[in-house]
Length: 117
Image (cartoon, rainbow, N blue to C red):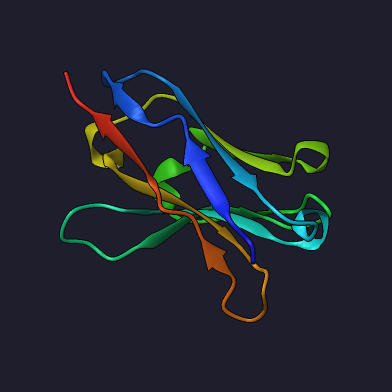
């Protein structure tokens, strides 16, 4: 069974930065696509960014382009989301997702990000 544990969330002022991390258990990480999603109160979950097993990047919502960067470290079974120039509208619970097991994949429990002065 795959388990995902996110970390790195918190409260930050507008314009600040955070780096989210997600560690994945098991031995399927290197062959799995990884994604970050977010869900704000009262809104649907949306794709922030995704990265394939080969490192190809798929961008999600337009609102984070140029500010958020997804990356992965297969040796550490980890995926990261570097978030810069944070805005209040980035406030949400951020979830890590892996494509394994197919086809639904697996989700982490999420980490809260709050952007407020």
